[in-house]
Amino acid sequence: MIKLESGRAVTLEALRQEKTYANVLEGMPRTKFNNDIIERWRRKAMEHERQRIVLIEPVRTPGPARFTRPSTDQELGPPEFLPSIVCVGLFGSTPVRNEKQHFSLLNIVWFQDRFALPIDLGVVRQIQKLDWEKLAYNWTL
Image (tube, rainbow, N blue to C red; front, side, top):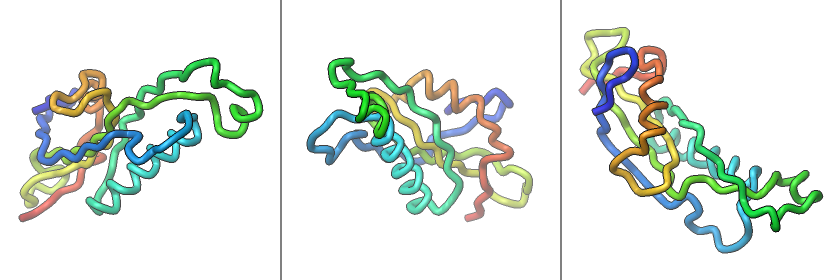
């Protein structure tokens, strides 16, 4: 359970995880490549869940300076790494906006250095700041 700043409690109902760079065979990740990974996971989560998605922006760690090349950096961005694991969590709580519904849900995509659980504390802090009432959708059984 995570208690939001609004006072609402949300629980993790489902969790999917994968290595961020799974299936990457070679090369140094760069800004453009990482942006594509993030967008692909956001779209993948939306297609799978068919509901609203919130992306917690990942922390980007600069790559080694020896791989910096002015022409490549200009086109693809500098070398950088995302956290090792991408997580897609479905969180639930009591209904929003319409008390006739049974509960509310929100899909959240985030990146962290290790497989969850636990959820990275920095990510938990970002989740706590979310405006659940605006972002979540109601669901009825």
